[in-house]
Length: 264
Image (cartoon, rainbow, N blue to C red; front, side):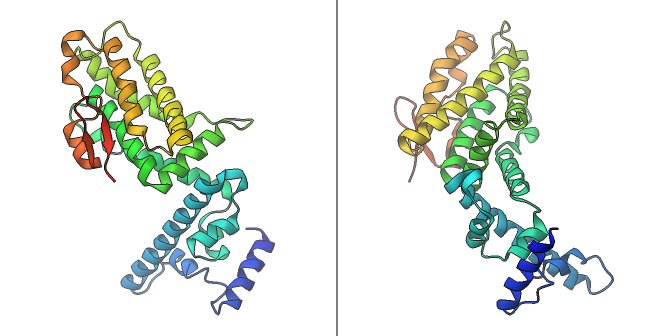
C-alpha cells in the first residue's frame, strides 16, 4: 500500500478519534482466525463484511452518477460513510472496485444452473430480470455502465459480454434440442445477437426515458425476433413479456397486447 495513502488515512482517523491502525476495525477482522474467542472473531468478520458492502454501495452510487473516469475515491468514501483507510484495506485501487462491481450483474443469472430444463423462455425471463435490475439496483446500473465504459477503452475487455453470450447459449442449446428453436440456426450467433441487442436497447431506453420503457422495448425485441427463430407451431409456448413466475417476481403487469409494464 502506498505510504502516502497510509499516512493520510491515519491522519484522518486520528482526527475522528479512531485508532489509525484499525481502518474502522477491519484490520482486526483480518486476524480473526487467530486463537481467541470464536464469537469475537465472527463478529469482526461480520463487521469487516458490512464495511466492504458499504464501500461497494458507495462506489456504485459514484460510478453510476459520474462514470469511472470522473468518480473519485473521495466520492466513494463520502457515499459509503467510511474512511479511506477502510477503503484501501478492502480495495487497493479504483479499478479493483470497478472490477468487483462489474461482476455484480451476474447475480441476475445465478439461479440458471438450478433450472431443471432451461430454454428459450429462460432467456426471455433473464432479459426482463436484467431490465428490472437496471431500474431498481444502483449496483447493477453501475456494473453495466462500467462494462460499457471499459469496453470503450484502448484495451477493451470482452469478458462480461462473452459470459452473457455463454449463458444464453447454455439455455438455447437444450431449447433447440427440444425443437423450440429452428435447427438451422447457429446458436452462438443468435446468443451474440441477443446480448448486443439488449445492450443497445437498454442504452437507448436510458437516454430516451431513463429506462422507464425498458420492459416494453424488450417485449418489442422478442415480438420481432421470436417468429424468426421459433417454429410457427411452437410460438404460443413463449411469452415475450416474461413467464407468469417472472412477472410475479418482478412485479410486472401485462396489458392485453402482452406488453410488460413495471409497477411503481
